[in-house]
Length: 308
Ligand code: CDT
Image 1 (cartoon, rainbow, N blue to C red):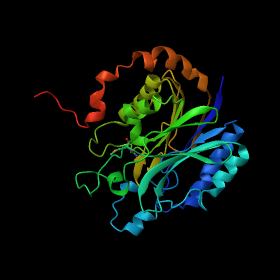
Image 2: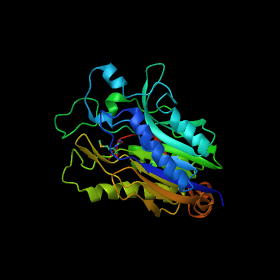
Image 3: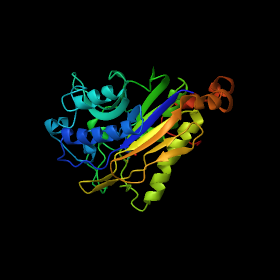
Image 4: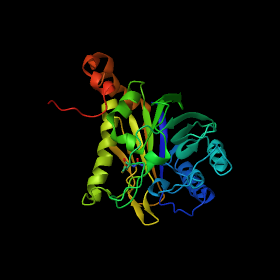
C-alpha cells in the first residue's frame, strides 16, 4: 500500500476587499485542522488567494495586475510554505501568475513535503469571453485576463506517487485526464470556482450543475484509474454565488468524501495509490486496448463537423 492522507481544503467566499493575508490565515487554519486529522497532502482551490476576479470587467491593466502574484512564494504566502514544511505536508493551490515577461496565467503548483515547488500547471481550457457581454447576467472574463496554459498536462513523480494537476473547467474535458492517464497519473488535484447559476441558462438548477461536477470528476477518475480530488471555492462573493461540493473520487469512480457546506470546510480521506493498479492493468490496460489509429480527429480539429 502507498498511502496518501489527503485533505481537500474548500474555501468559503473571498470578498473583493479581503487581503491575501486574511485569506492565508484561513488557509493556515484549514492546514492546522488537516494536520490534526493526520493529513500529509492538502489541496486548495483555483485562485485560492483572492476573490474570483474574472467576474469583474476591468480595462486598466494596473487594476488587473493587482490580482496577480509576481513570485511564488511571496511575502503573503510564505507562512503557508513554512507551516506545510514544518508539518511535513505537501500542498497544492491555485493563483493568478504574472511572469517576469508580463504573461498572465491561471496557475496551480504542487509543493512537496519539504516545502519545495516541484510542479507548476497553467490552465489550458479557459472558459468565458474576452469582452464585456451585455447578454450575460454576470461576466466570466478568463479569456480576457489569462493566456491559455503553455505547459501541457505534465505529471510529477513525488510523494511516492505520480501526481498531476488541472484547473476548474479543465475537469469537464476528457482529454485533460487522458493526457495525464497516458503518463500513469495516480492522483489528479484540481480546484474550481463554479457559479451556482449558469449566466446563459439561468433555468438550469443547482442540482444539475452539481451533477455535472460529480460526473466529470468521477468519469475522469474511472476512465483513467486514478484518484481525483476537486476542491471548490464556494459561497457568495460580493453577491455572486459559487457552489461547493468539493469531492475525492477513488480510481473506481466512487465518491469517498464530499463537502456539505459552502464555507471553509475540510474533507479528508486515506488514499492508497496502489488502488490504481487494477484499473490500469486490467479494465483500462491502455497499451493492449487503445486503438490510436482511430483517434486522429482528437488532435487534428477542435470544432465538431457533422457530415454534409
Ligand atoms: N473557473 C471556471 O473555469 N469555471 C467554469 C465555469 C465556466 S462558466 C463560463 C467551470 O467550468 O466550472
